[in-house]
Each structure stands twice: as C-alpha cells, then as structure tokens.
Length: 440
Image (cartoon, rainbow, N blue to C red; front, side):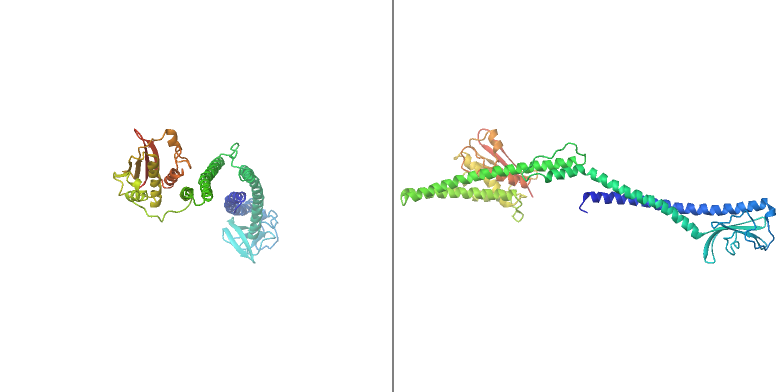
C-alpha cells in the first residue's frame, strides 16, 4: 500500500478487529457452555419441582396406565419444556402435550436422545416410586443460542464500523502536520532552498524536518560552491584564452617578422596553461564525483615517490631529496594514480614557491596504520591566513602562475580515501606539507 493513511488504518483496524474478534469468540464459547449448563439446570429444577409437588400432593396421582393428555394440572402445557411422569413399575401418570412417546424411558440423569427424528435433551429423576423426566428440543436450544450470538455480534460489527470511521478521521488528523510539509515542499519553486518551519511540530516529525533542513542547507552550500566554482573556472579559462587570442592576432599582423615566432611561442604557452587548467578541472571532477578508481594498482609509498620524481623536469629532480624513515615499503590503501597526483601537486607547490636554489626534502614516514609524506621547502613561508585559504579552488599565493587547483585536488583525494593533510610553518623559513593515507 502506497497510502500511509490506508496503511495505518488497515494495520490498526485489523489489529483491533482481530483482538476483539478473538475476545468475542472466546466469550461466545464460554457463553455457549454457560447457556447449556443453565438450560440443563432448568430441566433439573423443573423435574425436582414436579417431584416435590407430587410428594406434597398425593391426591394428584392417577391410576397406572392412564393415558390422559395432562391429568396433572400443575404441569406446564407449552412448547418449551416437555415433561412425563411414569411409575417405576410401569404406566404413565401424566405428561405434557408436547412430550413425545418414550420420553420417560430413560435412566436417571442427563441424556441426549433422538425420538421420532427429533433430538431431545432430557433430565430424569426417580423419587417416591415415580420416574419424572423433563426435556427440551436441542433445535430450540440452538435457535436460542443463535439469537444470542446474533444479538452479541451485530452491535460488535456496528461498533467496529464506527471505530474504523473514527480511526480514519483520527489518522487524517494525526498526519495533518506531514501533509502540511508535503504541501509546503510541493509549492516551492525549484530554486527555493530556505528551511522548513519547525514550530508546532510533533516530536516524531521534528527529527525529520531537522534532517530535511540540514539537507537543504547542504544542497544550498553545494550549489553556491558550484556557482562560485563555475565563475572562477570561467575567469581562469578566459585569461589564457585572451592571451592566446592576443598573441595570434600579433602573429597575424607581424607577417613573417621576428615578432611572429615570439607571438606564436607565447600563444603556445597560453594553450599549455589552458590545457593544464582543464586537466586539473577534470581530475577534480573525477575525484569528487562517482568515478571508480578501484581498478588502479595499490602502490608502495616508495614507488609513489619514485613515479612523482620521474614526472618532474630534470632541473627540479636535482633539488628533491628523498628520505625513507620507515614507510617506503608499506603499500597505501588508495589507488596509485590518485596518490601520485596528490603527492605531485604538493611537491610541485614546494618547488614552485620555495627558494629556487634550496633543496626540497621529501620524507616517507610511518605512524600507526598510516603512511605519510612530508614535503619541506625553504621558501618565504605562509601566514596563518594564507594557510587557512590553501585548498580553496583557484586560490594562489601572491601572483603564482599555477591553476590554483592542486591543493583542492589533494583535499578531495584525502576526503574520499580517509586520509589527512595539513600545512604548517617551519621554524626559520619555509612550509612543511604533511600528507598521509591508510596503509595496507
């Protein structure tokens, strides 16, 4: 069932109906036993009453063998209870008009017998030389019991129907706050992300609304971040495109002069920068998106450092000093390509912003279940404010020529694979960048 109201109504109503139906059946079974015992007791009381009347009034006796219809006037002439009085030595003293033949031919106590195709329930008592039998029809008993059962179940069915109707209105009233939330969400425009009102809500719905508001806030932050990212990306891409266009225009106007080669060279550099920004954007989108890197090989920390250094220009390789402090042989629990990308971005920043003549130290360390890389440069360092901005998209220190996405990619890789990273100022000069990932 897709309707919550109907589901609640069916669940609660069925449980209520089942409970009361079982209770009614239990009561009916108990009532049937009590009803049978009461009618049996009535037969016994009638027989004892007739025996007492005969004992107190001997003149009511009739000669043996009499076949009178009702020689004893005190016997009830009705269709309910039949009565027959016999002498123990034989002969009928009297009986009611509705008594069948052979009714009194029964041993003392309760008996259920079929006489002339009719089932009778009888009680026989022997006293003062007489056998007194009282009886009623089983069919009559069953009819009375059916009437009682009908009178019991009809009010139950009526009450059950009224209860279901009342339950429907109660469920609708109870779900009214949820309906208000649905209407409020349905009436919103696509871009409306303001929170839902949390006043006058039931305690059960308050966590739901709080969660929805938290989701709306996260969506709003994400959309704002994406809008800012789009604007920054457009600005970053426009700059090299403008430079390329300008240099191409210069080359066209210069003809075959010496300025043409310079203009084309500058245009080529602009295209290279543009290509670098696009590659960084694609990598960031892949890391933050749902693209799977599970097929990538897991590499040891030492192998990751070797691949990063192999990708550096020759003049920069000489500046890097690698020191294994116990973690080079450990494999990282992260795709090798992403680990190489993250470490290369950190090392590239150290080489770019550090002292051009000073060495950059790359330490491979191990602590607990983590393997880390520490990159130390000897540049001008960073202020606390600059360290706080590091990792923001398209942020660059000063007039740096990078894309401003390197540390953003590091941040995304760390978030996806439970790693850690931080920048801290070194004593004296320079910055130490720490990058760590879980080890196999």
